[in-house]
Structures are given as structure tokens and as C-alpha cells.
Length: 143
Image (cartoon, rainbow, N blue to C red):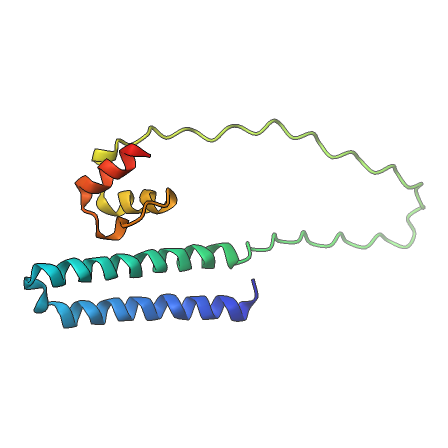
């Protein structure tokens, strides 16, 4: 991804953080009303989902650090006799890759609401941003 695109994504992430903070400051007094609180929570969840996706995009877009180049070999003295070129060495065979260690599966009831919403997003569960923990556990248990 081009640097200009990465910069745009980063500015969007920064702006989302700023908007979320401003929204929280302005809505603090109105959250006593349950319906306003539910809508504000749903909007905040959607903003957080968008921020997470933008952050992932940025991480994928940033190129890995270039490996350091080895220092150039010193020049041979002029008086050294010429040697016949040796056949290129075969690369050493790599040992088989070890499988990643498996993490024990976390029970749905032990997960946080944020973890449950993330999992629900992966499974494309509709209405997840307005669900509470019990509803998320139930919805995820069905899929």
C-alpha cells in the first residue's frame, strides 16, 4: 500500500479516536436516559469496529523492515593468484516448520464483551453492536 494511503488511514484512525472522545464528553449527561444510552453504545461499538479494521489495514500496509545488508567483502590484494570459480553452494535444507502452539479455547462465557463482539463480527452476526454479553453468548452458541 502506498505511503499516501497509509497516511490517510492513519489520519482516519486518529480522527475516529477524537470523535469518540468528543462524543463521550458531550453525551455524558444524556446517558441517564436508557434509550439514549443504548443508541450511544451501538454507535460507539460501530466506531470501535471501524477503528479496529482501520488499524488492521495499517498494520498490513506497513512494509516489514528491510533486512540489513552484510558489509561488503574487502577487496583482494592485486598480487593474489586467480582461483577457478567454485560452483555455487546449494542452500541448506530448512528443517520442517513447527506448528504454532495451540491456545486453549476460551469459553464464550469467559470472554469480554469486546472479544465476543469481535468474534460475532468474524461470524457476520447481525445486530451484534446492540447486544449485551448474554445475547452475544447465545447468538455465538447457535453458530
